[in-house]
Amino acid sequence: MGLSYRRFVIKLGTNLLTGGSNQLDQKIMSNLVSQIARLQKQGAEIVVVTSGAITAGRHKLGITKTIRGIPFKQVLASVGQSRLMHTYEEMFKKYSINVAQALLTKADIADRAGYLNARNTLLALMELGVICIVNENDVVSIDEIEEHKFGDNDNLSAMVANLIDADMLMMLTDISGLYTADPRRDPKAKLIPVVTKIDATIKKLGRNTADAKGTGGMITKIEAAKLARDSGVHVVIADGREPDIIIKLANGETIGTHFTSAGNHVESRRRWMLSGLCTRGKLIIDAGAVLALKKHKRSLLAAGIKSAEGKFGRGDIVEIYDIEGTQIGCGIVNYSAADIANIKGAQSGKIKDLLNTDYGPEVVHRNNLALLEREATIANR
Ligand code: GLU
Image (tube, rainbow, N blue to C red; front, top):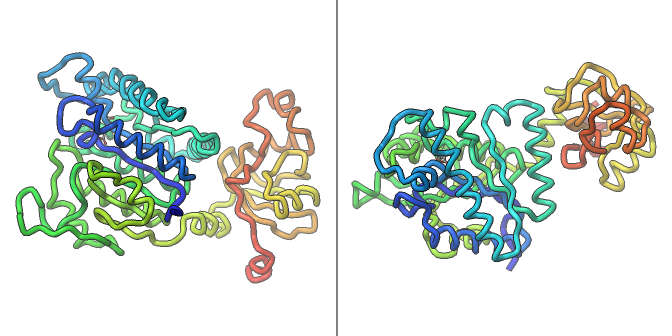
């Protein structure tokens, strides 16, 4: 059976991973891992966003009493993160799948070079078939583990979904989705299967459903869902303990609450890049490079660049022109304007000598390129 979506971010919450206990639940985790492995074998590209470091740390140190305060939680997260990763590593090993760890902060992703670095790394890991396991870098960032913001791996997962152009974000937790009232208190509460617009009414419903372990609960999930769906990602909030939930969702079954995407992600990224609103400069490229980009869907290398105009940095968006002055498209650059001035026309192998640094052979990676169609060029002029 063909998958309904191809690229996924799967967010696994603490309540799910611990089964409500005070430690990682091996059975629940290995079941989730086996589903992720199966999904990958079906051709899906997957990034996992996981919580559970603090709980794992608390268990590892044998601490039962509650010690309050952010610094201590950071200590626990730091202790627990390695156990969490070790658990995933061992579990994925059974399926001959390699895992990678990425500890991110929201500030890293908001920064243009950080965004580019994280995007390039995550896309490359997916290409290699490595499952990247992401968690917030709790030792550095504090809003994640502050009492009132606890549960913000939800937001991080939405940012990651946006970063990698995911088709679907699965937020797996220990409740079945968004209800018309809090199902823990109101027996008449009904599950809402599909949400096509996140408005004040939906947010109010979210605020009514608190999360058992005092984490952000439904409202942070809804805020995160809004962020993701606005950039073209389908979002599902569902009970991760339901049998084969990951496989079923990937195959398009309606389980939990599905927040339909507000458009196609790749298209919205393309439109954003081509809108010209954020461009910082221009690259002029030779005919060989034009052919490589348009016909062979290759990346833009230094050898094909004739000149760079404007003052831009690594991670900025630039417009790309041929030598006749026709715009070919736009892209996010791996090198600053000053660096490009030094490496233009050079073979990729020379970059290290010329710059003393090397961000790779691509000046613009094909993943970060948006090409204009011929029609669009004429229409836009
Ligand atoms: N990053 C925290 C942890 O791994 C969890 C935060 C959350 O649940 O959102 O323990």
